[in-house]
Image (tube, rainbow over all chains, first blue to last red; front, side, top):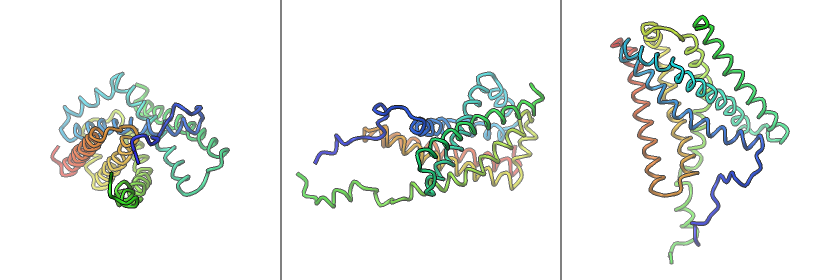
Length: 131
Length: 127
């Protein structure tokens, strides 16, 4: 018996894109992006522990245009992964498998992740007094 | 030709006696991360624009430091479990797969430890 030609998952190219499959791969993509984001979290904590100068450098980097762009992307990735993760946990509990429900919960996750991202950034800018 | 029985082959190729522990650990860490992440995001938004003394002072309380350490531990545990599945799905060379898995785990340990030690440094007032 040969094991080298077994079908491998996930074989994305052969499927017609649908909301369910697109959100599934987006969950994985945001997960990998968030894994990279742990570098920023660790850098921020190390900078805080290293003293005021190092922390000011970190804040400057994060507050720069490129830093904010990255942080915005990570904010969306975090809220998407969080919302869709809850959707996954509900599936794990055995609920929401009807096609209609799965499609509706998918759109709800997309909507919630956009709203949460925009709301937290609006709140953040309000905290800074619009700076 | 192998002299191993089909059952022996299957046992050698299977879940390596891990059973559902990977799946279960991923779910448990995701459950823990729901409140921890929401708390951390809210705290970070509230700290936007704060200077070093404010942030260091915020971290230097037992409750905040404890929650941060839990957040760091659950985050990196969950990250390693997730990246492991991604690597196993897409990286098919046995050596490159093993190497990547080891690098990811080593990096996660280094980052998690650095984060936790940073929190402890602030908690015990050395920064």
